[in-house]
Amino acid sequence: MLAVGECMIELTHTGSRTLSLGYAGDTFNTAVYLARLTRPEDVEVDYLTRLGDDEYSAGILAAMRAEGIGTALIDQVPGAHPGLYLVRTDERGERSFTYYRSESPARRLFDGEHAPDVTGYDVLYLSAITLQLLTPAARERLWDTLSAARARGAHVVFDSNYRPAGWPSEDVARDAVRRTWELTTIAAPTFSDEHALFGDTSPEAALARLRDVGVPDVVVKDGGNGCVVWDGTAARLVPALPVESTMDTTAAGDAFNAGYLAARLSGQDPVEAAGAGHAVAAKVIAHPGAIVTDPSLPPRA
Image (tube, rainbow, N blue to C red):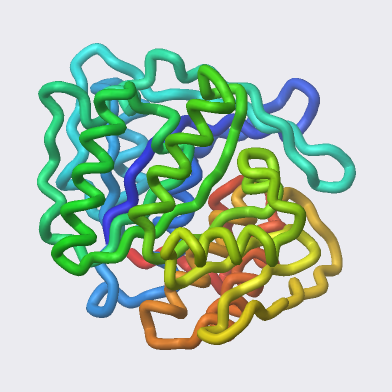
């Protein structure tokens, strides 16, 4: 599997003036948890982004390799620095973000001279944040890449992780997400994102619309309400697992996607895979930060 997107410096508030440094990003988070949930002989996990040549970029590369994630397709742009974001959580574990990423080298993915060879991959994974990074011309190159992958039988896995502040307009975002759904084989959106972009009135409505677009495998996340998944014949509600406490909801959806995808790649049916996704998300939200330290989720490496 090749995950495509941006890994950033993550600074998480552990107090009003104290920060903890880590590395995270939505598709990177999913790549990490997928690597932790699978064996390297079963699923190879690689990452595609662009980094700088500073010490933080070196730290990101080291973090990827420590998780058993392949970095062969990552190039380093001289003089550039990775994006950065800060995380605050409230007393309920809900998070808010502040981003500094306008000059991130990941924004140069699929630009004029950047043409990575992805023909060896069985699964390509991306999100709407991946799309948001790119110039319009680079998005067209990415869609051509996804179309070619579909033509040779690869899976395209997409999560419409919609963040309005990163788009020039809602219309641009809606068109980009719609174009990508048309190339997708496994859809893992969150209901609130699909509601915001397409006006779906329920997770079931979002699932039906994506099925109508032609996506064969669909799971629509809905936070604490669980998820709605296409079981092969009908939409099925799979409740979320009860949790004793929620420390930080950062990366909950990314972790769910990893659990769902790991189960589907191992041959489990969609309902079983949804349960696996909930189990991973429940572990992650019990810890601070996007990439957690949990003995039941050890790094692959």
